[in-house]
Image 1: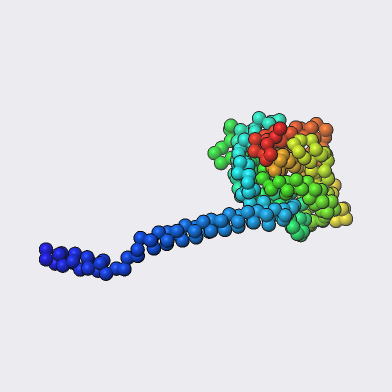
Image 2 (image 1 turned 30 degrees about the vertical axis):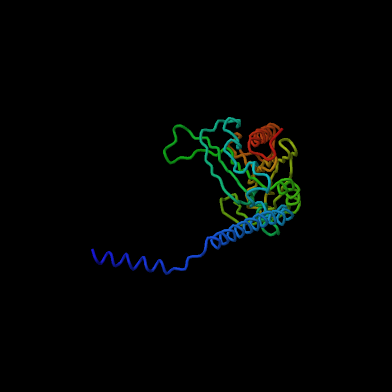
Length: 299
């Protein structure tokens, strides 16, 4: 017990020797801390506002300014893209009973593999989205086994860009189509005897229909010429089907829709009027769905 008292007495003596500041000095120190916090807060606000001003002028077809989570002073703008903004299975001319999809941040807009290969040689490239959501609608037979995925009917990507990048997107697309049409690539062909040979293929992209849905829209066709000049043994019936891509804009949203051959009875080498109308209806349905997430809201 005596040892405990000695410890308490020593502690009391040590504390009495500490030079405590006067009450007035304590209040003065607290005031200086408040001033520093206020100044730091003002500096942070100034930095955020200045960053918005600096990046606002850099947005273009290939701008990475689309990574900004929002615009200063506009906290109510829509950000993430909900599933409701994508095509519904009921929008397709054939039934779909399986949906696969995901969402992402800061993904580059994906248009067409051939165009992207051509665009990779340019600076800047395709714009980067702020938010994105993707899906593939599939027709799966009830008799399919556990590992079967079924037949893909349509794939769709919806991207949210900055307003400036979204409004300039189709001008950049037109420029890309004009630049890349006529590009050549190496491919594999087949002879009449089934032998595989290397061939050179010429690519062509054309805007078949324009402004049929949303704020802007195009039906983009990718055709490839049958290779020639590789010998008479090349299978004369070999030809590439036309690949169709729908691109639709509603506000700051860009949707890229790639219909699979499951939307028609057989792969088409040409675009029939019936097939074209079916695709345009799909683009209009997509535009209506995008309204639930677009900035500004649809009227």
